[in-house]
Length: 438
Ligand code: ZN
Image (cartoon, rainbow, N blue to C red; front, side, top):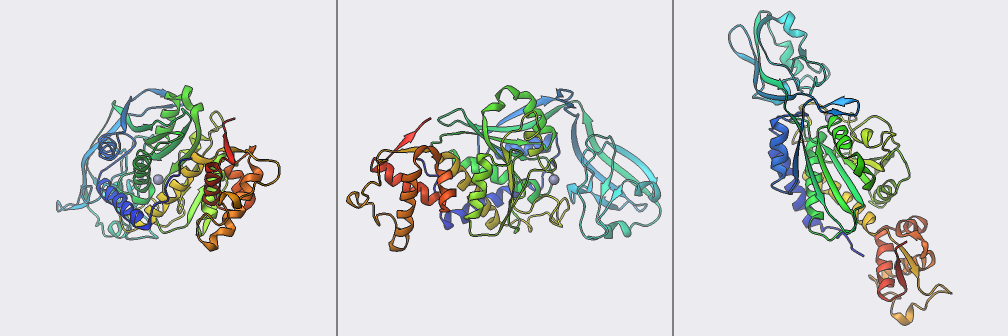
């Protein structure tokens, strides 16, 4: 039995600060689904975990899709007739529609307006827009900024390139005792947006870092990929190995103050679905569990019918359900170290269940063994917990018939997995249980 230690409050506080610092360094980089911003970001993660960087050439067919041209941007602005920059990419990379083609042209405000995007309901925020699969250009700006533009001629400049190149992704494989894998996947293609994508990148990095120090039963595969096209590309290139994935989670939106939300895998009642549900139920906090739908993040690809992998998604407030989503307000103020740390502790608790969810055999199945003579009565924890621990031992002894796993026992007894695991460890130590490998 290999307990993934529940981290102390002090430790979690520190790790939350470190995750936040990593996000702060990633924040200014202009990422996209391809290009140097993505490369710089995964290289930065290499300072924490030894991830491998893969490059897939533009034009590579991946199932029904094609790896797109590589996009890179150096500068962009809109100048008014007086030569003043009224929109400036250097102020925020959200100002340029992601994947805009290069342009340098003078035009009237009427012509320019067709390429400007704002949010009238949130006049101070800049929206995040992309045009990946249709060649176009555009600028995003606050509605207040848009309304202040005067009639006249504007100079539009986007110094970008959209050329044959590569799609980049980061992959970190952490080998365990078996080749069975747990997949942790996060999209890493958004520019300066914090909850939607940087929080997921930070959590996946620090989860990998935490697990890297342990001896584990499962092997763990961490993917830092561009949304949609990255998952499709990875699945296409690794199709023959996908059957090794026994459990998986898509990480995103894990740093906001909202309650934890779990979106089930398409299978619905897979071990990962039950493990996450158990952790949230025993977290002492409000939470929500929603059924799978073919809309959301990369679980859409992992759970497509040709793969149907047991991959769910554990977030806080899901995409599209917070006002700041895909706007400049999804910034370093929205995400806080304490929420990042709380999310990480839940991921670690899920991993602990997966790692220790074994079957056992009661070595003394005819009537109850005498616990008192083995010093097992009141042996674990204080007086208050003695009753619960005794109950947990009785449940484990009764259901350790080679058919029930520890999570089955936890669910049936309504006790926490930790309590059941502690009881099983004590019984194992007194040779009242043996591991059932079948
Ligand atoms: Zn997004």
